[in-house]
Length: 170
Image (tube, one colour):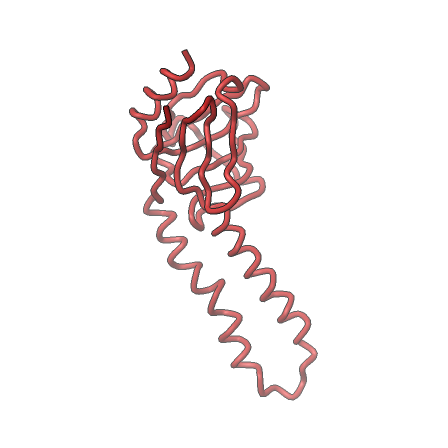
């Protein structure tokens, strides 16, 4: 039995994505045309490096954009644009819905904080270091793994996800 749960972007992530996307894609092009007639081209290596860094960062955000979650064949699958992440259900110790307020102050350690979602490593006082695969901070699920690590996900249908996961963990 396979069950799919969609992951939609929250308003904050939509705004960040909408504001930042043109900067990542258009800024290098606009800067190139603005500087193309300059006599001194000593800036060129730095310009190329800046463009590459922006485009690689943007590509990373797109490639690891979480599209949804599925529970199938004894696994929790984080479905991304590229390279899904899987966790065996036997690795899951518990899964609980948590509010943003209950999560407390969260710091992004390394990852993406709003462009097509929130992915990477975050830390909070309550849970310590966590890996996030989140698209909506208002629908957070903290999943504790048997190895003591935590992951955070955000399925749109929180009740349906909890029921399906509970049924599969029995």
